[in-house]
Length: 497
Image (cartoon, rainbow, N blue to C red):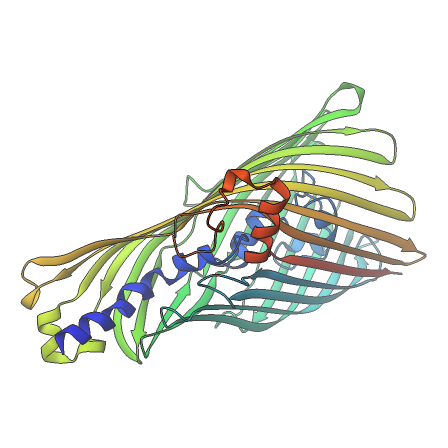
């Protein structure tokens, strides 16, 4: 009985590190932290995807944004827009995780109508919208009788107002009702023109990250909810004084949480761009269950850092070229206790003892980006490429308390097998304006070129064929067959009148 309980305790050991195990399923980095990680490497928006996944700096809104309600300005026109995004984030066709996949999709629609008051001294717009977000992860390992599943499906209804008084004070407020949260969100943003070239503002916003990891192992069912839902308050300054445009954001109450972006115009139509961000998320504090029985807890901190530098040139009034380097890192550090009572029964659990564990995981990346764009009166298009050098790492140190919690034994370490992933991301898109209609469509594709994996059970070179003897194309083809990467596409249609 004790031997069987020890074997089944693998579930308790693996459940807290399930998010870490997900990192090794694909060349795409969005498995563990969903869109929070994906957006770290690929900025959102059809125009952004068309230029290889990195947004122009300083940022300009592409759609109505209820989370940052100053971007509900409809520019004195009626506006209707619809956007769709689909991602096949990962698909594994070979190896121990064969059959695993992850995908997501988003849909949003919004309308905005302008108005004016006090003889046009106060202008603004009213907006309303609907959104749908879905995400699903499926990880299968038949050899170890392991099945991991995570799924998110929720709708959101939105409304907001934008006001600009006397050209000096701007105010935006939204109401967002979503199945993601139990209560309604109410983002607010206020901006004051301090001078002709300097604005100061305040923003109350929300950070949402939540999913539920379900795990089946050795006949047992485990569940680990992961939630980090918080509100944040920020002060910011916007500088627009030629040749510099810059924005600095500081989160209130968290001195280390700040963000900055800037663009510097140079002679001969050249320019420099840069960006820095550091953020510590609210502490993750979650309990998990095994077979429906409370069986332990996970505590930890999630951090994000990013630095970007780039150079660009306007080759003509319509053509531009830009190159960027971005370094980013997302890390998690924590620990907890896994109880043996759920799988061993009361008396055997006294002998087997509980497991204590400390865990850490990180994804760091170096991104090398180049993009070319054409902007005409009606037609626009772009093409961009990134080489992304990913370095995932995950480790769990655990040990077991002995009888009645006296002493410890069975200390061990589990580590992530995937050490390094190299991949190319290609993106291209086209836009067209016809009278009051504008449509943008963009697609992107990950192409894996190298995976460093220290797991001897993963498929590799056949006997007698050393890795170094293969051509570059054959090595890439082999990685594509094993980790085919993922693609995504975005569509945005806007009508103004």
